Length: 248
Ligand code: FE
Image (cartoon, rainbow, N blue to C red):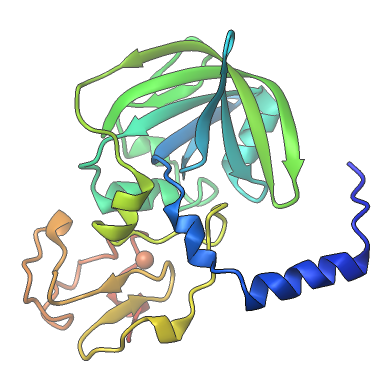
């Protein structure tokens, strides 16, 4: 695990990165959106991941990249198993928020969803899923903030014929954000957001409530101002209440 990059080279690379590189290019890489689940003893946990990809076919090995700070990381390390649920294009933001912006250390996500226990003993999320893959970890790679796990596929099935969610669709159509622990997180440059009257930003996850769009997943019609939102309305991405929003 030694890293022999001299400081000067590292500094230079960092400098070039900040000055010349267009970080938005990374958004041109296509991904899907998945729930990666695992277990530790009797406990289940899962999280949203976009970095899920098949690396070889004989045997079928599926890699996932998981932040070391996440509870799912701890569970995979412990049990050496993980399942992948492939999310459909119609997955509501609130559901993505439950698995993407809430920690299993604070709530049992599996109390909120339909799932079944697979052949590995790990849970398979069924809600909004078009298919699933179960794996046993063969090896892993340490990539500083994250670990890439390589899992041998031991079971898989298609659940329905709906279209899979793509990360681009999540970003552009659903206006989804990456949490700070996601591999694809890019620090937002605030000047990029056009400041308009009436928009409110969730200080927890960065979601922006735009009255022009409303919140269709929660039956909030376009044209509803932030003040008109019901008191029990919550951020569709992370579940934070209205007091956690500030004007853009
Ligand atoms: Fe939020």
